[in-house]
Image (cartoon, rainbow, N blue to C red; front, top):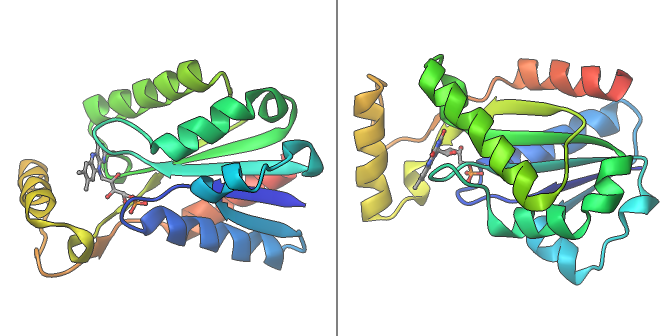
Length: 176
Ligand SMILES: Cc1cc2nc3c(=O)[nH]c(=O)nc-3n(C[C@H](O)[C@H](O)[C@H](O)COP(=O)(O)O)c2cc1C
């Protein structure tokens, strides 16, 4: 049985986590999908699983506190299990070396804060979800898009997630 624990702010990581659950189920694996906020209430026993995936998204360089709390609480069990960390961000949609350095630093901070060292880390390109943003977020994200010369229509969501690449990463992790 594989447990997928995820945290999302605008919904893309939920979509990523569901995709992973469907893919793994398609490969014949038993899968449980749990929002990080609920994992605590459920008093999850990580030792009950053969492998675990944690997924979260980057906002101002950081992951959701529910995911940080889960990883910190279960670091002992996670460190001895087969694990995968999916980090969803917009930086992962591009090739800017500084952005990628920022992503690596974000993962290092997460690892230091939680005490969990993921068996494998995969950076997943996320999405602009203007339909979920308030006025200020929308303004900030339009500014970010302009800085990156990204063609966006602020009335439309735009997804960068490469589902085929994610499928290949999942398979490599499962078989590795
Ligand atoms: C307010 C805000 C801040 C963000 N900060 C970052 C960031 O620092 N680095 C980055 O690569 N992406 C950043 N993003 C992009 C998100 O990581 C991306 O939209 C992702 O798909 C969000 O996933 P979620 O919908 O699961 O929360 C930010 C997005 C928002 C709305």
